Length: 463
Image 1 (cartoon, rainbow, N blue to C red):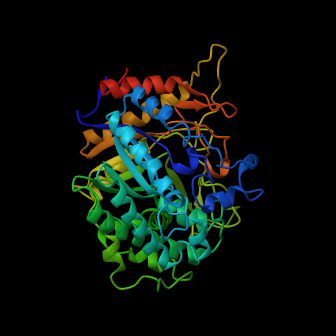
Image 2 (image 1 turned 120 degrees about the vertical axis):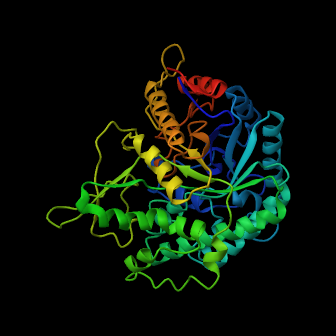
């Protein structure tokens, strides 16, 4: 059997807009995802997050599921417009009460609360004022962080400032396939910077309000970029700069990569970066959150045929890969998940070891990893999701290989606790280890949930 370190933190994860529902109850304000999903044609099937998994009303039931799974931690996100409807100004007491009950419920079940401040649901009023391309949004985010530190800072185990700012910036403001559906490359790069700045300011705010023992983190969906051949080194470099080092540079090293600035000079002069911003973005972290689903394969486009764009991020009106017009994103061999993503766990090992080499001494945590499959409920009511079990086994084995090679990986959170609203895909893609019936909201454990419970209980992968 493959064995994990004794104090390895096992968890599972969700996000507010994907599970909570109650979109206009108890003083919650509208978010950019409410606007996006209510716009015809934006989301598959016309789905919205209005009800989602009804987690807001089924909190105790879902907490009991977590307890039965035996996990040591639960990663959830706080809906900014639920606690601060306009993104600034007074807080909403009923919204704070919901998260206070959630945190207390976790602690009562000996589950560590891991709270993500921002999982993409920007208050619509802040977007109307300019959104993440606007500097003031970073300041508002720091104020929101301070409010949450005041309210929950004595009880939260780990604070994650942002989830996947790559998606927020590039899918939201460059390709337009995510909220707020803008296709403005220069604005997307400004959003990159203000997300980085907002992260740093939020960490500073939390350090003054949260418990001293609370850990500070950020979650990045780092792309493990590979080239088709050695001739594709510059394509790898360019994609890596935009996808990874645009965030790792300022957050961990206090500076943007020079090649990123040069690559994007035709799009922006980066004048939105002011003196002191990069230092403000670079705040000490206790652990770096890593989301991984599959690697990215690129090559230099020679212009002889139609350029491939199989990056796994949906085709939009524009590309999220700013100033990468000569980079091809190549479709990789299967097998594939229902998202069309290839299954290749070796990329996870290689990514973790890269981070270990580039940022020695920084602990790592897998904050999302999982797979969507077209699960079927058998006649006996059982969901035999063997492909998901195989996916999880492969990737957990990859984590142990990284640990054996020296990477300091502290924990693993499976995505996701339950089937939920998968953004622009609506409810068509099921990532959960617990099935949610869309008509009744009934929760049913899949085989993967039973398998994961055994892994959590033993700290070992069954042979």
